[in-house]
Image (tube, rainbow, N blue to C red; front, side, top):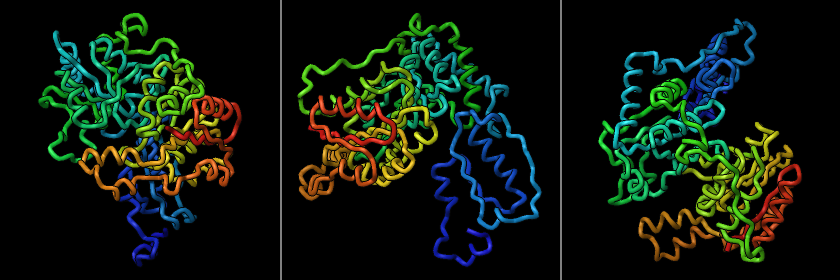
Length: 440
């Protein structure tokens, strides 16, 4: 929208900054054309975190009003991008170094029961951070956890294996109560998703002095590197003295003993892990149907695992498309809950238009099962009206027909054998495919 019309409050006027701020580490609206170059530089500094554009980065949103793009009398400029986020706490600062040395001492204290809870830049392989975090955990004898609803993990052979923190708060508190010191790396302190009556909110049942946080206020890469050296993690060798933190050999789920058996969620997860190619990207919005996939895929060749955006649903199909466009050399598999997929089913048409190498696996159990679980937590179990609101089988959704209508090759699988064959075929051809996995 042009700057000169905004004050008149046209029908398309909205608080774009407010919307972008909910998902962005950097949000700014350019106020004049001469500021575009410096605003772009600042956005890139936060979005990429280094001058090569190869950092792990954040979401940075720069809003450039329509009319500024057409101004002719503008002073152009080529501006350098800083190598680390402006104002980040650096280990070069004495106070930060003292903090990290204290953290290392707490993790290595004799008799300590430490845990590490990692997310964001700490769980990516490209920067080397995840390997370092895994070695820190091994050097300290710490249990390594990731978020229940993580953003991205680089997993599989050669990578650390982080246990997912349980989704429900009572289970998470029970798990974390086993430890007396917790290090949080590039993650928020875990709290309950919803306010369950008489349920816990804060999931780490420890006093403040027992919880150490390396958050986005730090230069996370540099902080991890210093901690890595402070705890002597250089000596850790995966498969030799890593205490089982790293996955060191390929191990996929075995072939089914009864291929003609009815397809279940567990069998579907095992089949995906058995077939997924090395270097693939898994877009996982499977919710309740994909519970077993995380452990089933532990021994797969290296891959990237992207999960849903917090408590929101519907990201799977468009996220899979984005991954295919960004990484055309990598196969994308979208494990998609049927209810969530209905929020963004039109992405299938875009996948067909782009001939994107995406295999969408729809977990067709005919209901919003995650909502049923939440209703049970709220003790809403007897209402037929509530059950009707979470049902998708009256009328049933024909996912294969929908996909074909959008120009995507589709198949239906009701048995383990059919699913195995459909997945192998879909992975063997280029372009988008969809498998309607009818789960029993």
